[in-house]
Image (cartoon, rainbow, N blue to C red; front, side):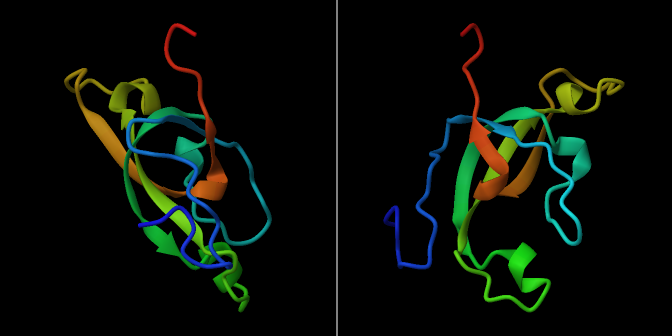
Amino acid sequence: MTAMTATTDAPTEYQPGDRVRVRVDNPGGHFRTPAYIQGQTGQVAALCGVFANPESLAYGGPGQPRQPLYRVEFDQAQVWPEYRGPASDKILVDIYQHWLEPAASPGE
């Protein structure tokens, strides 16, 4: 897959292994990023593809520009502080690129 497949696609900004932070926002209307994951830092596990923007489609818009969708991995205990399972447990969430920003690596 190329970084930009059409003029209506947002270029992919992240690769597997990149650390990202989910932005915090509460836009009016329909949005596809769960509140519980906003503000969390994780690691890109995979690029799932490039899709029409569902936040535009929900209101009859054209879904442009199409957005890369990433599978992002988070430490389960980081997302849910009361989590009592194994420390190695992860949660995977599919998040559109426009909700992500670069995050510093641990220790930076």
